[in-house]
Image 1 (cartoon, rainbow, N blue to C red):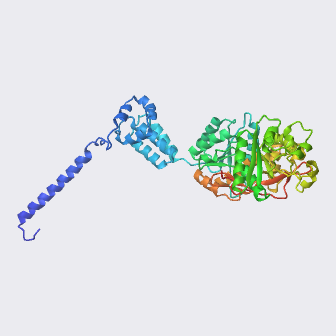
Image 2 (image 1 turned 180 degrees about the vertical axis):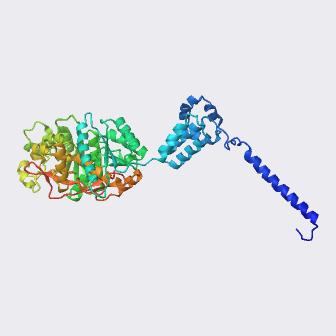
Length: 547
């Protein structure tokens, strides 16, 4: 504006500017006072087929939505009007799916958006709120609170009560010391039932807020419990030796040696420490027999050895002529070349198979079975002229007169941890002497003496391997959970434990959640007792968790 402009014109310009500002203010005030606009139409056009299905009565909508493919719900969700009665229910279904996939941020966003528009009287509102609260509080636990999940009633109650006694001792230890807070143990009974085990996991996690769980023991209940724990992201350390638990997810651990891991460790020891290269396997027709046979076989071949024969037998077998005859090539005498020397040696034998020589082309035989069946089987090996190495310094030449001057090969017996039994060692006799087997727990080991004494004082009995594993598992969980309320952090700490000192020796969890530990090498001495073998202790295969 020029200072030389006439006064009247300047006054007129100022008046017009004031009127314009007043109009702008009045328009803004009118807009603020106006009722809220109706929700805008969805940007995604509705799916006609989906829209038609969702016109069902409100009471039927949950069933209709559950029956609708998820992809169709995902594609059509944005096309549903904000006021459509089915929209909150669809949002709940999609949020649950996202949470199952551990896409928690997406699930929470779905729930918050649905709660922002859902009517207060809509039946889905409470479910949306409850699920959102569950998601936002997931992983939170009460520091120092541990769950135990064991069969305390039913046919396996004795096993469960023994493990519980060991866990109580571990929790008692965890609460000692000035730097540790009090620990609390919450116990649930599975009765050996898978459904009860899964339901108990929910109670332990949601009602009691445990930082982690020790147990169960059985295969089916452990799998069911581990699945439930994975959904809730609760660390669980199962005590089962059956396969198929730790592979369920990152929160599942196992503090027990699987049969396959045992067989791998035994194979590695035989190859690397004993220098054996050729093997035979005798196994029962049962899942555990197949599991150990396959694991031992693979480990031998990976280590550069060779399996020369493998024969199975029925669980009901009381005599083992058939599998051993097949193992040494005596099952079909007509297919073999006659041997005059053997015919003379066994001229009084009724079975023509005895008149041909056995093909003993293996240095060791692995008996992948229980102690009772192994005790019944071993004499049949001797009967069919498989000479066993029953003493470390045995001289095969001493047996030459028995075979017409020919020196027979001596075969080393390899057994399962079931051989670690005073009863078996005393009753097996000469065939079982010098057999080699591994085990993870020795009650008289220096690291176990105090635990054994305390366990005996409480229960009146000697702890078995399961009780020892339960004790160490609870101590490891307590160490990881000290002062922690975040279950994901407990899981990370469990994986971070290294060379943890336990009554089964030093151990740690590998990346698959399996326990890695050092095994004791044992044998049966000439006096019929279980003894450490040549003072070789703490042996462990480098890949005990590898399939």
